Structure formats: C-alpha cells, structure tokens
Length: 100
Image 1 (tube, rainbow, N blue to C red):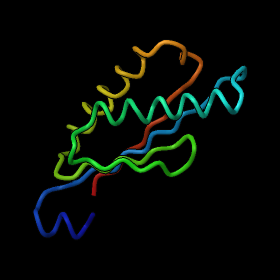
Image 2: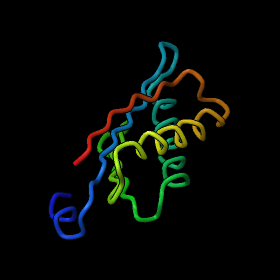
Image 3: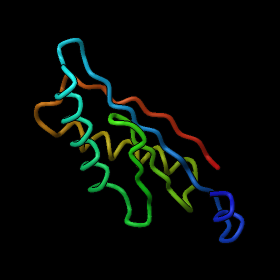
Image 4: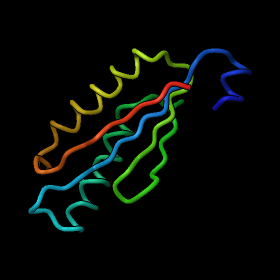
C-alpha cells in the first residue's frame, strides 16, 4: 500500500468489515451471512478495489487512491445494500477504517 501511494501519489484506505451474529444464530447461519456480505462487497465497490476475506466472518477492503472522507460513502453504500437483503436482520456488521 505504501509503495503504491509513493509511486502514484495520494492516499489509500483500508476498511475492515466483521459480520457478527445475534444470540439465536448458529455457525452455519453466520457463514451464510458472511458469504452474502462478501457478495454485497463485490457488487458495490469499484473494480480497482481489493477484497480479502481474512476470516470466515471478516473482510478487509483496500481502496487505493481514495481520500478519507470518501471511504465513509463507500461504507454507507455497502451497508445500504446489506440492509436491503432479506433474512439477515439478526446480524451486525462492525466496521473500522484506516487511511494510509
């Protein structure tokens, strides 16, 4: 990331999304929810962004050449798409971001 930024200029953002289950959800439902969230990410972010599934329920997204405030818009867009999916209301998505 730092090499990319120094070569092409600008900043990159790293986003972390973690899918967590409510008390009633079992591991299979959590895995299904995490897989569905991964599909939402593929559908909503730019083709130049990078998605990495670091755990069964966790995704890291690299947003090259993006200013910090724009990352909030990406998170809102992803969360809006997620909230429109039926069947996953008992799952929470926790987010974290870092500008590099």
